[in-house]
Length: 256
Image 1 (cartoon, rainbow, N blue to C red):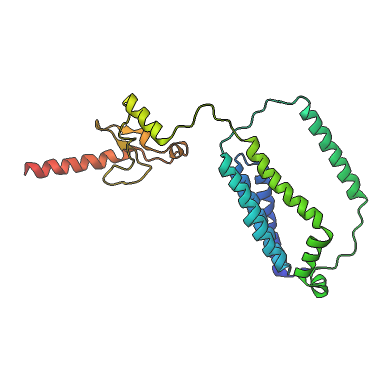
Image 2 (image 1 turned 45 degrees about the vertical axis):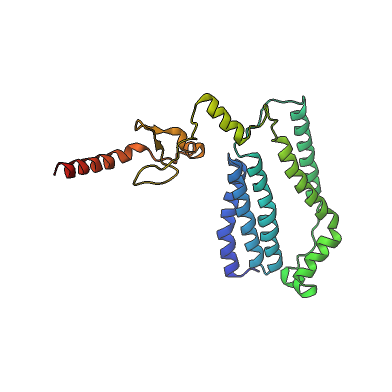
């Protein structure tokens, strides 16, 4: 039997976790999928804590959300979130083999779950009365399921290394140093003093404001490409009216 508060929390967090799980499946960006996964893991830890499994809930948040998810996010930042996967089949027959393996795994799971018999549930209260929550989890993790626990950790590390290997790109040319880049700019006589700095407007000093060239035209090279792709730059046209008002004020004061 569950209490009223436990049931309310479950019916609030349950649909949100289902939506986050669907977002994990249908998200187009890997970062969004990772955020949805972290949301599900944190709420799962909250449900454990509500059911008087405090240690299991804290471990869920610290280990899976704090360690495993940070590992995946680190891999995403390392390999880049804009890396595209090729749809060309490099190994012939891999799609057919993958389909056969998936159908075989589905059949094994179907027959295994069909013949599964579960004992009478005891509940968390009975488990805590016998050995304690921490002792019970430790006996299972480091006793009965120690090999499954170690294999799972090895698989997580293997998945991270495999992601880095699969997304690694060989450099076509030699990597240029800062000195090489400066010497090339001098030889080509292009931006010898460096690119123009952003935020040169008197009333707006920020990296999303393009710089002005000597002829008064804005320089697109002064704004980061990341801000341009995100459409987070400030167009210079919105400052023309303010500049014109300042010039008119200066001219009026000079004529007086």
